[in-house]
Length: 228
Image (cartoon, rainbow, N blue to C red):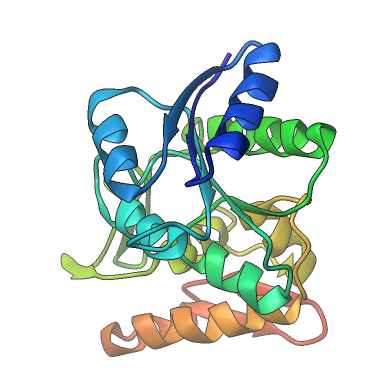
């Protein structure tokens, strides 16, 4: 079973979550804030982080960004937990690189299902091609680095996932729904217009290198990555 770090400043919530997850065979670590969580990340092999939005000191969102920037922790799947239920809040959390977002209150069945889905998706992603190279664009999933003509392109976690998803499906048109499912999974509910926003951001990152035209709009259908 999975080794899961539960980060929440309320002891009662941590105990409830660790009991629930432990009853399913998972091994849990507990942290009350970002500092404790960082120490556990540095000394333990983790399969998933369950991170509350509201933490003392540094917020869960800011801590998630820190984790996803760190080469030592960026590979760990992360589920953000929050009482904030607006779509803008979900988008903000997912933009940090979080793999899923669950709104309080939630049922035990929903939590366990989302954990299984995230771990399953990450295992599937790890089995994919590690390096993709097309038209001078090199995407390395192990180092989480994109280079164009040997120059490093600094992408956010979401734009990295989007570029990788389109590149491994090069020349094939993908609908907005397929892109949402491919990046966030079909358990996360976001407006399809979210894809358009991230496509625009990705093109902006690629434009200085002359590769923005590789991300093509197929009117009435979706998007594709093509050198042609």
